[in-house]
Structure formats: C-alpha cells, structure tokens
Length: 135
Image (tube, rainbow, N blue to C red; front, side, top):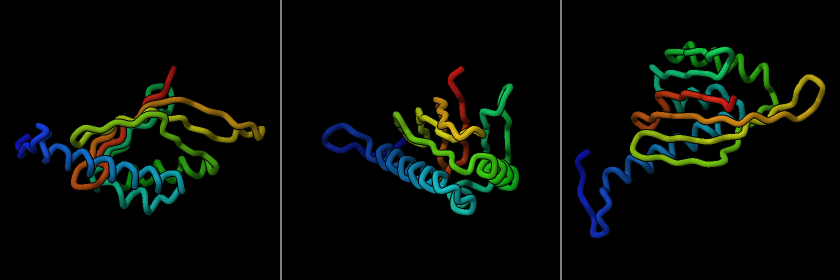
C-alpha cells in the first residue's frame, strides 16, 4: 500500500485503514450482541459473505438478502446468545477475533463454545465474516 511515513516509521495510511477496520468490526459486533438485524445489516456491504459454523462444514451465505435471513434464523434460534471477544487483532482491512459464544440450552443451562472469526472490511462495512469453531 502506498502511504506516507511518520517519524516513527509507521505508514499512516495503513494505520488509518486498520483503525477504520477496528471501528467497523466493533460497531458490527455491538449490533450483533443486541440481536438487531437491521443494525447488523447496516454494518455489512450489499455483497457481504457470511460463512457460518453450522455442521458439518458450515454454510455459505452470499449477498445481503441471504445474510439477513441467516441472522434472522440465528437470533430466533438463540435469543439469549452472546459473543465475547477473548482476543482481537487487525491489520489493514482484515480482522481476526477469538471469541466465546455463550447461550442457554433447552434445559436452561448455560453453554459455551470457542471460535474464531476472520473478517474483511470494505468502505467501513463488514464485507466478509468467516466463522470457525474449536473442534
């Protein structure tokens, strides 16, 4: 990437892109944990791709309509679900989040699952969210 260099040797354009990526992912995750499908979709591109962790090998959802339908089904099936980041890093337009997914099962017991999301941000919105879980 082209960019100017400040006195410390950091590429200012790269830092700005990374900061914008972090802000976009933070806004997306905040809306996601509220289970606000409209807000989640407002933080995703029209051509967004979401690869879920649904067994056996995940499901791929392409485009706003398909991704919206996936979120609606997910939130309906898991009304108390929450994702909490354990670790988070970004560089440029890419972000990786190691998370814990917490939900209440049908017997009323809290359950947890560990996983990782790999995200790509374009023009301030999440363009790609690829989810992986610990086996």
